[in-house]
Length: 354
Image 1 (cartoon, one colour):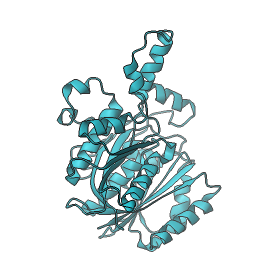
Image 2 (cartoon, helix red, strand yellow):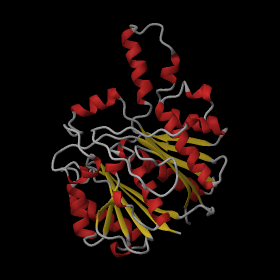
Image 3 (spheres, helix red, strand yellow):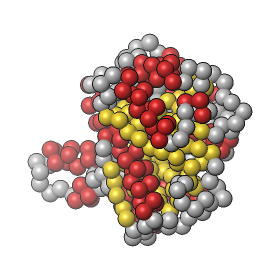
Image 4 (cartoon, rainbow, N blue to C red):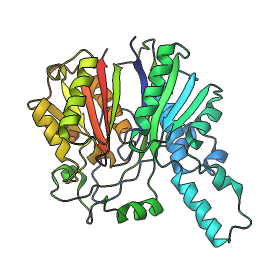
């Protein structure tokens, strides 16, 4: 059974919400933290509600609406999101007030909106969608598990159109905390030079990407979601390479059938080593594209990678800003997205042009 990506929507540190050619004018930053470029949310959300909404909810609602509009679907049968951090901004507001007000006279709004499933709930409320609604909070696998859940539901035949996506934000609080673990660069680096940076750490990012998945092909569909797989804490590179080989085998293809590999390189000299190993072992002459220098590093960044891969299949060319190595073939049919988060959460997504 084929599962088609009928529509996509993405809000990220690049101009991805406007439509038009992919990365026609890429934004270059020189900082250690990227913020999403906000479109005009008034086109989807009532002005009175916008005031009370946190940024991550607005990003999620915006990306979800863009995806549904592209697919020509008014209400999905199910909404499935993946997020690792949830609504960090509201969590910070609530905890700060809790400390400052000595746990007395707290407003419930910030608490209600600080839960991880606020984004999926808000999308459902605005769309009037009473179907299955689920949020996966599985750190670096949050988005992939949302996709796997969507695939299983579609294969069961209990839904026609499913809205699935990944969303995460970065706030001042969370950036300070994560910086203590040495996750980010000590000094600002130009984003277009990030992937060749010889030091440890990467740049923080955020964003939301949603996909309208269905078993029936809509006019806007350019790719089908052929497979999704995850691997947790592999012991060595060989295990990852074996896992990729098995994944390709399960999807009836070989490394030679892959036209483009999209990797989650993030400019951290330690974390990018595994991508080198995999490329040398399985895809030595393949063209390779990367995406984390465009959107930053965050647990559900793979959603941006899948969105970009889908756009590449639609345009049949890789924008210069995304090329990491090699020349892309004339026809791009199969794209493999390989990403890992902090070396522990490895994931594979295979897209096939339809």
